[in-house]
Length: 133
Length: 160
Figure: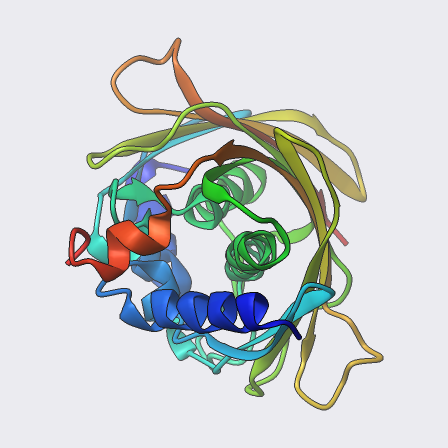
C-alpha cells in the first residue's frame, strides 16, 4: 500500500484527524508518521509539553497503520500497550516509527519509537499488541 | 476530611478548571469525587475521540490519555508537597471494545508513594456499566518535591 492511500485512510478516522498526523513512509514491516503540534495536545500547560496520553495515542495510531494500513472500517484492534517515557515532548513536530516485530495469524506485536529533532534521543518507546481476528 | 485536605481539594479543582488550554480542557473532564483514597472523574462523550464513521467506538488512545491525566490528579491529591511529576511508564489493557455514546468514568488511585516515585492504578467504564470495565491501567510517576507547585504557576496566571 502506498503512502497516499494510507493517508486517505487516516483522514477517515475522526480521532486521527484530532491527533493531526500524516504517514511519511510505509513498507510491509514499518510505518513512519509526523504529528503537528497543537494547543489541544498539550499536557503541561506551563511548559507546553505534549500530553503523555497523546504521545501514547500517536504511537498506537502509527502501530495500527503498520499492522493494517489498508483497514476497511476501523484501524487494527489494540489489546494492550506499555509506554516508557524518556524525555518531555516539546512544542514542535513529533515523529513516530512503528516496527512490526511479529505478525502471526491472531496477534501482532509492534514496537514504536517517537522523537523530535534527533532520532537517537527518543521521547518515548512503546510496545503494542493487536488482535487480528 | 481535614481542613488542609479540603483546601487542597479546592486548589486542585481550581487548577483543573483554570486550564486555559490543553487536552484536559479539551476532554472537558469533571471531577466527581476526590479523596486521599482515590479520585473519580467523568469524561463526557466526544465524537472527535472515535475511530469509526458512525462515531460510536472510542479510540483506545483517548482512554490511555484519560488514565494518565487522572493518575496525575490522584497523585496531587494523595501526596503532600509535590511540585511537578512526569509519567515514567504506563501500561494499559483494553478489556472490551469501547463502543457507546455514554460518558466515560475513571477511578484511579495512588497505591504506593516513595520519595521519588508514585505508583498508580485505575479503571475505566461507561456510565452505568461499572461491571463491564473497558480498560485498566497502571503507571509510575517520577515526583519532584518542593514548595513551588504547578497549581501556583497556573493559578497565578503564568500559564494563561
